[in-house]
Length: 202
Image 1 (cartoon, rainbow, N blue to C red):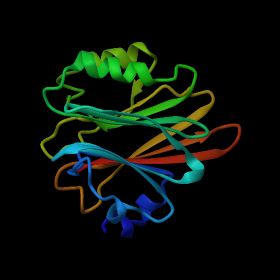
Image 2: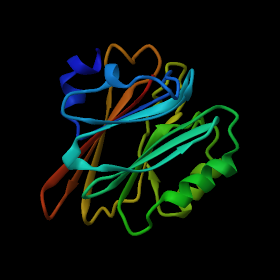
Image 3: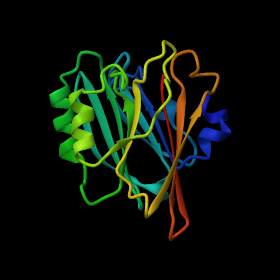
């Protein structure tokens, strides 16, 4: 209901939610948003992701569903968007392997999610090292968690000569008691075509 009344969220082309509390067999009708396709990737309480995508803006390509990590990849015309939730205690080498397996090296890609790894205190973690080794940059510079952790990450491998990427923190009332949200705007400089991704963890 909060999403249905959030005009900023609904302006997005893709909405990525993490740390959902849905069971794998949840009935999806009550979670649909008008104008969006819904892709659920759920394990259970506090473990899952939901990805909303306007039909003209992309389709689900891959779902990886494990107890400790959930990953969904949506292929949009200009970019791929990977939504990820990593539970605390997950095997970082396994998470890095899963991500590396689905990244299309020749496609501009945004990876966003709650990794439960602080980018400041755990800077040398295996997931971040792998992504940076693949040419990704971490774009979130502010703490987004209520307790001050930099655990919500947004990675981009977009060529700055071709794309302009802006990221803005967004704090709607229904997420601000735990995590802030991020609005990622991707502009193709030549085509002037824009894609907006909004990401938050509950």
